[in-house]
Image 1 (tube, one colour):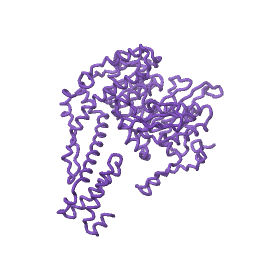
Image 2 (cartoon, rainbow, N blue to C red):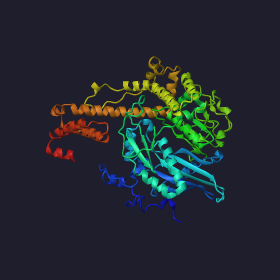
Image 3 (cartoon, rainbow, N blue to C red):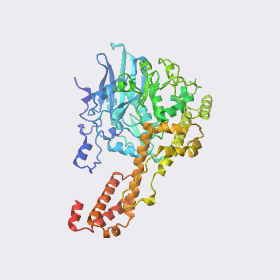
Image 4 (cartoon, helix red, strand yellow):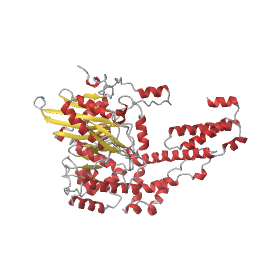
Length: 592
């Protein structure tokens, strides 16, 4: 019998030349690290968006089994296949009949290639909170379960799954909802056709409006870029692409509807924001993976534009390869957010400090029945407990009741869900920014003054972060001035400083500031009168300066997107002038 995972290596669906599965980009880099091919090979554009498409079926002998991986040259490890198979079906307790959509996140097995050029560029240009993670995959699932008397089990059960590294949740939910029904109706050729459509997509470039044709329809959307204004217009004016008629405009490629996700627990949104900010372990319990994945993703998105730096699993099962690691009682729960549906977890995770129980989604626009009181964690014994937040955590901040009143009034007036979502999202964005502004201000104060940057010394370093020094400023210039919320901000910062979110933010800012200092130092070298400086210097000092300039030019070539061309040209001219003053034999050594 033909192996379905390798049955399509012969020719691509457009009748183009065959793809042999060789990584041509890797060959070019191996021949010469500086040589870059501009040729777009089959599957290059596809792999910029999606790693592969899979079909998972239920086999009576094997249980969940991988029926198909497309394109055929894509390799998954046995561990990755096992995780994808188990996570592609809702838990048997969910009773999901018909079609069910959700997504999951798994660890990528070590030893794979580092980020592709397109993905590295994407990470440089997009907001930090939307950067793709090289060590994890997302899986977007469309599961179908229908009664079928021709099958011994009595049910047809199959999932179509898209595996990707991009955190474009809204986009891939839309894409899988187009591809999967076609596959169930027309079989494998329709999946091939969809993959070839994706192989024609432009690269995922932040800041550009993208037209994405898929199976006779065109999706249009825009990935935010780092230079976007966060409050005000969320979408800068992009060039409108008129080459294709657009059928669906996606307001966002990555956001989820956080209002609907938190509908039954709205009074606790600020408490949840604190828990996510300080990286506390949280488990979301619900009856379907659709609900858990929406809620987990909404929690992670709560602290944008700050990046959530811990692990999170929108849908987690007892078969997950990290199950033992994340449920052990021999040590404190790790700072992760898990979404679970199996009642078994109510017992296994009852030692976790924060448990969110989400009921079935209320009808849109109706006034939701709210879980007003926070309950003690020990009160949750089964998955059938009432919706609510079960925790012993005491909020550091006083509750902002105005936002709750505004949302409740909106629900009574039948305000559209999109508007309610925008109100809540903006409130959380402003809350996070109020928290981060004092930190950004303090970080800026650690920068050396520009006038102290000397071309004749090494580039200056950022002064170390002193948490006590920072906390001294909170009382008179803290977040309460911008957001109006009172409370123990100082203690909240202390908890934040111990979290992976602070560590991630600090290292990112440290990198950015040190890059900025390198650029300022490079400009200082380019503008200095180096010919005069070397007049009375020994050869060894001049060679040392030449090596420093070469280092700077190497830095500029690796960071060409942030270094001005004029600065590089001036420094290159300085280098040539200095080298020309040396004896001929030394010049030839330096030039080699």
